[in-house]
Image 1 (cartoon, rainbow, N blue to C red):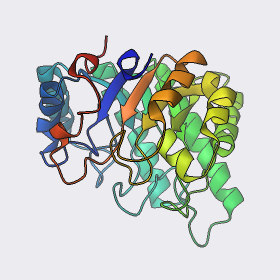
Image 2: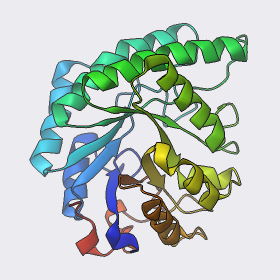
Image 3: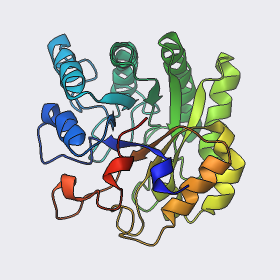
Length: 279
């Protein structure tokens, strides 16, 4: 048990950001990792030129890294936005334009998990209107994910850092997961269980794991406080990951933490080099 018993991937949208996007897969590989994940890399557009998609695929392939998680278009992230799919008007339209692009790119690199960030509450739109739009868009995304053999992820964020985001508890995200699965009949909507966000919300992490491990499709970690590497805060991450494994979770654990003042490559000293390559 412990960290060496997990399958880790590196989030290249928060780690190795000191490098251009196309150099990050090779940097992750040089640090010993064989699996990576990404937020939607083109924050200005849901439909980048094919040449840019091809260049990213080549960078992943050349580095020998497997993309195991990809966000759909989520607006300005990093930045003020927390997704687009529940935001009426242009942002919802952008999300819809991105669905097939993201699904096709995922298929081209063998990525089987697509994360759909819900989006903030916005002034002038009733919450029930946003929720109805969200369900509509999540159903479309789940069908596209299913077409390419992928799961659709729904994520809880934390209220202190994302005060306008409505899914700030595990049960809130699980409710959306269940609604999507009921609407599609596909069963491919899953919970993205982020231990950092849940801890920031003050949730009982062991209880969340017990209750929802079976509905969890992806896990992300960072320590708390600070959102740094494991060991920089006070979360018992090694024990919690063991609890997840004991509860039947056998999927990926995304490293979605801030490296602090040091280069990203120096932030992995908590993990033995022999445990970085995913089997």
